[in-house]
Image (spheres, one colour):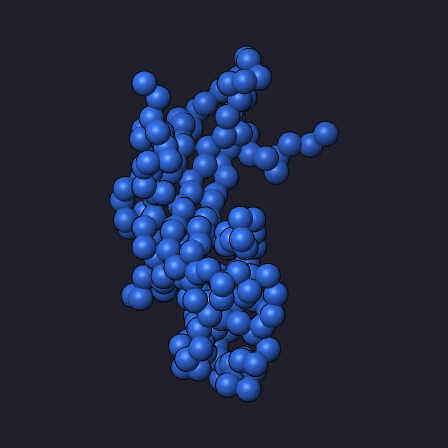
Length: 187
């Protein structure tokens, strides 16, 4: 009998042989991924937003920001449930049969509740964490002026509280025949 996936937890990984339960691995991927994808809902319509983000491990939350007004802000204000994912693509894996072509990958999927941060101190903290992640070679107060309260009127900072997560990874032997990276292919 087939599994009833609708009755399983949202973070259930169908391919258990690829599931990653090592929380250090999940945290590491969230720290190093450059782009995240936030899914929110509007009525019954999913909405996806790709964006810069930062994982605050101490607080077990993700911070991101967007425009003060827009679809993401409206969706989060209306229904804070979210799904968020990051992924890394490895090598493409050719095969003798088209249906057997595959790819190496690693991903983390996060579920939880998002809110628009209204506390000024927390909003500045989240923005500074983003700056620290994407510009670690620059020093606030030396190379740039840190965020100030007046600037918060132009952006919306979101806190994504993590309720559950899952990881998934496919990796094959280094000597897999014909394996190649996507950016190495030229037409």
